Image (cartoon, rainbow, N blue to C red; front, top):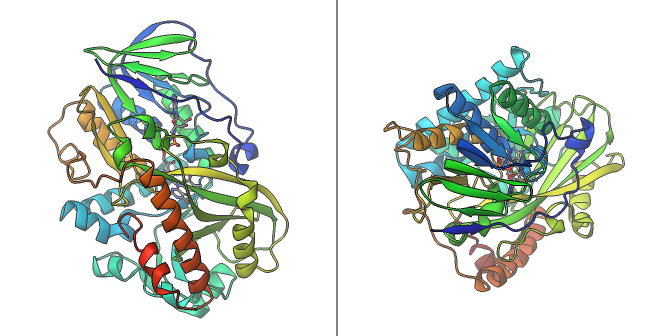
Length: 453
Ligand SMILES: Cc1cc2nc3c(=O)[nH]c(=O)nc-3n(C[C@H](O)[C@H](O)[C@H](O)COP(=O)(O)OP(=O)(O)OC[C@H]3O[C@@H](n4cnc5c(N)ncnc54)[C@H](O)[C@@H]3O)c2cc1C
């Protein structure tokens, strides 16, 4: 029997998004011993989409979600709300899965249309606006960051400096491309909308229910502080927190990304578009319908082992570089009213993986979205659903299934120490590049050691 242990989660700092809608649990903690066909651990996009797809495929199945905190309290309620397809990663996808890459990219386009249909039908109001996703350069080193994707067939349309200025309100980004059928949304509205749909479909949900232990077997026993669940199949939809699973840990590293929200400001011309500047510490932003600028930056701080401490919820001490970038792009930006961080689940290939544990084949997992999950988790949920239902279809045969072709990372503490060294080099490279200086040879060498870099 395999026993998986989970660490307690740090008490989260609520993102602007969750505060904005006064998000609160919709369900009581588990307080008894129950049985279910399928137990899903984690009530983020992946867990919720998987529950919905399972119910659509097999309505008679009993599906239970156990969420440590509140649905959407993880990355799903904290992210930048940038909606874009996998076409931007088509070169990485092709390297990993070959010709299947195109159908995966198209599947994320379908997922965007699915979101649009959910909103148009009134089932989830998520502030989805398909104003385009702009991928830009604000310094010489980032020019053409999108060339690999364009060569791979991505439907990205070139933009010049004038067009970008008109659409973003900043002259800093001066070259780029746009994916038209993409844009922005309110991440927590999406998460809680999915939660409401899942409840309406008869999914049993327990929030404020952290899983502390899973004992594998023909039926797994899932232990929580108030009760237990016996399940024929278990899904780990625990994102970065999956790092505590020994079989997954060698492939997963967790970094944080930091987001700020400003007071409402005059219209920047984004009109529902989201923007991603291609610098090494990737910058991303959107303006909410109420006028707030939501401005994110990958800070690259890595977790030690499987520990995701309070710094992965909020990191006031790390704010300065994000504020400096905000001022560089938008010197007239008003006061910052909110800031938070969130964990990004990364794989060396920068693409997620799905499968079943070798040591416990009725425990399934999906992780490694690398900071791009809104249109990608619905696709991941298709893959997981086929695996869980033992279907022999294209989803189950996807090249994203299984760890065989994935790169193992160095063991701790070398991984952590090495990552800190690489991160310091990336920060220096980034500072040099955004000032259009060439970083030194050592910095260039070390920063290229990033997994998949
Ligand atoms: C700061 C940030 C910005 C991002 N920006 C974007 C963006 O602009 N566009 C985009 O497409 N993607 C973005 N992403 C990525 C996207 O948010 C994720 O890929 C997506 O939310 C992953 O969904 P998930 O369900 O796998 O994970 P999560 O939403 O993290 O869900 C995992 C859940 O598991 C729960 N959990 C963990 N351990 C346990 C346990 N022991 N017991 C019970 N429950 C547990 C957690 O509480 C959590 O709710 C961003 C991510 C971050 C962190």
